[in-house]
Image (cartoon, helix red, strand yellow):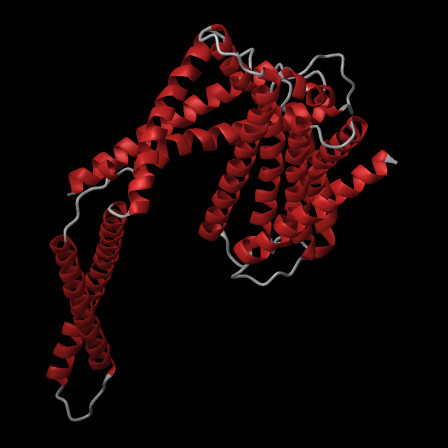
Length: 446
């Protein structure tokens, strides 16, 4: 009876998560496009629902909500369902939609070719695990550990890459010291250049039109010599005029982009003076310190092959009790702080990933590619949150991670934390170099 009652709670929350995913899909991703394939929306919402369900079960572990047997059951349901979605169903639909959008593939050949391509993809996906020490060799071919370990490698790579990029890019875009000074005279000067260039393009096009009309006109009253001379001048001027028009139009495009950048920079400077801008400027300094600290810690972990053995919360209480001699109820406060920390990680990670996906979708999507992009982002989301569970285990005290460790199986958890450090360091370093070169180039242009 406890399983039935607990299942009602889980299923009710899953319906709520599914509805939230449905609203995000309609209001954010497909607000500018007409939905032609309901299966795309269902796949995205199911992946979102399963991701939120895993996070909900982590919170239930800390808060000791539901019966322990019910939690075990729903952990297995959530992970097996997510593995099916990210390793079989979503990739197959991505391949099918890619082939369906191609005119080179006949409709009768799409399904057989999709099955053949999926078999090749699944073989490559399975071979991903060979170079990495991700699990013990005694596990069977179809065990949960085989799927979670491979999904975890891809998901941790995505997560660490986004984290490294965000840790460097956020301070750069939010701190006022990195904003180049732009005055109203700078904007007005570029506007004048752009208007003058557009006037010259208009005049040149008018001359081209007149030359084409004069060249095509044949008047019987004109003398043979004057008609031949006019035709010769027209033939000589037209190629030169067209070349000048093309060069002017290219210049106008560059001036327009430069004007757009200057106006955006002025808006950012004005925004940085507001209360919200000052708040984000403060956060930028905080994330700068975090970025430097994370790069140093990642380097130390890689060089000395070090992995944290104690979660941050337990380590904090260990310092308070042993170093400062405080009388603290570790069990009670550990549960409360674990609940808060996990809640913050869940909310910020979900919000950050959804915002990133919506931005990329707006930049890349079109009426033909929108379905493929949604399925691709759905695949990334499932792998991202599955690997998030693997990494989040280290942020929980041992008494709250027992079920997660048991359900995920005998994975080499230390490998994933080292792999995260390596990928984070590479991503942060590459982003730092690119932003430095871009900032230096803008300064030289000014």
